[in-house]
Image: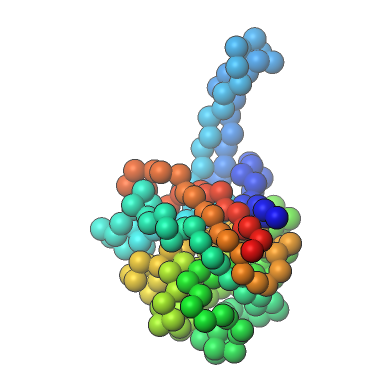
Length: 208
C-alpha cells in the first residue's frame, strides 16, 4: 500500500512563523475565456512538506539541487514518540529502533494538529543531544511531522546544525496521522531548485 505523507499546499496551510504565506493566483482561466487553466504559485521554499539542505543553515553549504537522491529513497523507520514535548538522546536510547536504520521519521502528536489552519509554536521537536545521537548512529535522513525539527526560537539552531554539518537530510512537515510504527520504503523528492535553500517535496511511504 502507498501512503501519501505530504500535506496539501493551499492558501490556508499553516506556515512557520515569519515565513511567506501561500498565494495561488489565476493567470489564465477557461472560465474567463482562456484556452487553458494556468496559475501563479507563490510560496516559501520551506512550505508544507519540505526538505532542508545544508545551505538552509550553513553559509556556503550544498544546495537542494545537489542533495543525493539515494538518501531520499530507501528503507525508513517510522518511530512513534507520542505525548512528549521533545525527542532527546535518552528517549532515542530507549526506543525500539532497528539496527542499521539509516532513515527515521518521528511520528509525534504534531501530526494530529495538521487540521489546524494556524501555526502553533509548542510542537514536539528534536533536541541537540538527540541530533548528536542520530549522528553517532549513522542516520542519513531524519524527518518530523511539523514545520521544523528545531525548538521554536531555540536561539541556537543546535539540532539543525548538528545534522546539516554532517550532511544528514532533514525532512519537515510530513503528515503521519495514519502511519503505524514500522519499516517502510520512503520516496521523497524535492523540486530541483538551482542553488535552493530548501524545497517543497512529495513524500510517500510504501508498505514493506
